[in-house]
Length: 75
Image (cartoon, rainbow, N blue to C red; front, side, top):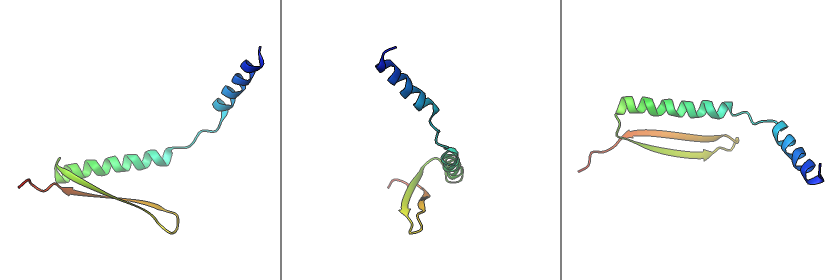
């Protein structure tokens, strides 16, 4: 086996064995946002406007705020 092939094999093994990132909290947050959209759709109807605000707080928290409103009827 050539050195290049050994290096490639070692690289692939290290990638495969590397610790994986835990995305559990990400998936819970996305599911919560989907539920919020479904609830807003049920309460306000399919014509809704969504406004988002994002902010870093001093304590290090990153806050995302979603505001749902009915679309104004066209004049």
